[in-house]
Length: 100
Image 1 (cartoon, one colour):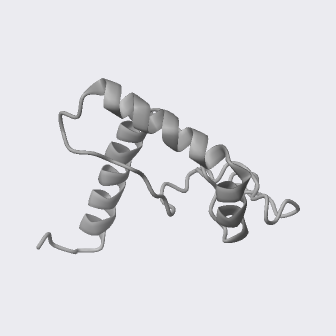
Image 2 (cartoon, rainbow, N blue to C red):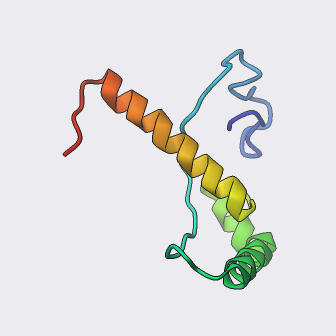
Image 3 (cartoon, one colour):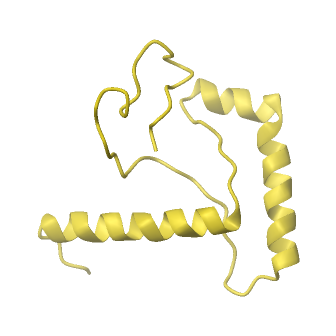
């Protein structure tokens, strides 16, 4: 995450270019469904979201507000979500914050 320059500030180096090796957090949004959702439905939703995010009428307003639409596979999203869970578990533990 944050390895690429922002299209809003193409002359500003990315975190990676600036020497930051790891920045494991950042804003993100995802569409998820209930556990056990049939794979054909998951694949259809993923295809439709990819097609929607490819439309300039959707993509351009998002980019103007600093969002960089990205499409991934369900497996990539699952891996990212698991990674984020671990990142935040460590951050909360290091900050002394107890689960509620």
